[in-house]
Image 1: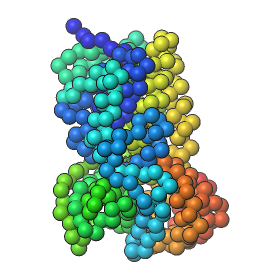
Image 2 (image 1 turned 120 degrees about the vertical axis):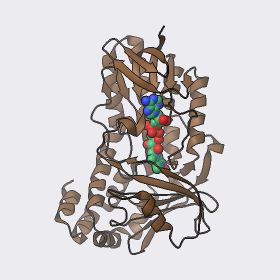
Image 3 (image 1 turned 120 degrees about the horizontal axis):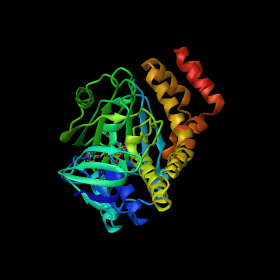
Image 4 (image 1 turned 90 degrees about the vertical axis):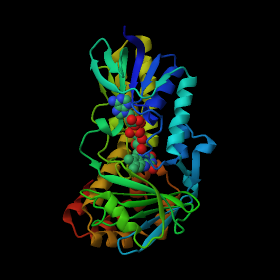
Length: 382
Ligand SMILES: Cc1cc2nc3c(=O)[nH]c(=O)nc-3n(C[C@H](O)[C@H](O)[C@H](O)COP(=O)(O)OP(=O)(O)OC[C@H]3O[C@@H](n4cnc5c(N)ncnc54)[C@H](O)[C@@H]3O)c2cc1C
């Protein structure tokens, strides 16, 4: 006989678990099915996130889940020039992502949700009256299916090959995030160093058509280090999905493309999506009206769509800049005024912060120095 729940959540990572926690708190019966045997494993994410965003949506990390606090970000040009942004006011931290997922899972269970590991949602038939799914060896019926399966269901467009190493190295600066731009080595993206302790960092690379392991090995040549763990995991930079809700199937987190197209950071935007979706789903359950689910996408878009569009536009620019362009842009934007403005901005809305800090004169300055006419029009008309 089939088990019965109000909501079946496929995927027990940050979005699925935050959804379950929030929905269970509001009285819904919720089953989370996670295909892996342990919540948070295998860990792929680097855990760089703004505390402010997680606090805003009600899921701040416990103190022992925070591995590090970031004091500045240094951006390197292809030729080795760099500028640093003071990040102390931005509240940026590095999470032990596996531990954070376990924390949210335990909150979900305390609120009354059931979290089942080693349980894959193998198939789900979603009809206008409900959902019938195969979860592990069991049959589950639910009023709604929440798809929180991550990149597996993201649109294929916008997926970049990426890899990261966790390593020990004496050159790691304990509280400084570093970003290395180079359109030949990391086309359309960059290489990053995120410190998570003394002389410890998560170092990653991504780019169109690259072998990210080779790119990382080349980056680490001449940098003395001991690699502790290697992970291959694609990142998603394609922007939000056009529709978050199809009948009784609700997409949250990376499944809905709720990820920043500039950096592929998705923890905060996915938690936000999950919390907003859970509120609307519970309201829809309470009133027996699936049409109310439309409120979820409207509310998420009110909070994030403008910023996502700005980030998509910036990504379009970054993807087309040659190394020569990057050097010229560096000279044009790395002014003390811009760096000060960025240090007082919002980490989660960095696209608008960058454009706002540049202003029209700054954008025109940048447009003047780039060689590509296509990029100039993206900057000026976008
Ligand atoms: C290398 C890398 C580094 C990153 N670094 C950062 C960072 O520093 N900061 C940041 O904000 N974001 C970062 N991200 C992005 C962030 O990890 C994701 O945006 C976030 O985890 C999305 O959460 P999610 O719950 O939507 O999906 P996911 O975390 O992808 O989880 C999906 C879950 O669904 C499960 N699943 C899939 N299919 C099924 C099924 N059929 N049945 C049951 N379970 C299923 C999976 O096992 C998984 O647990 C990074 C991503 C990568 C790949």
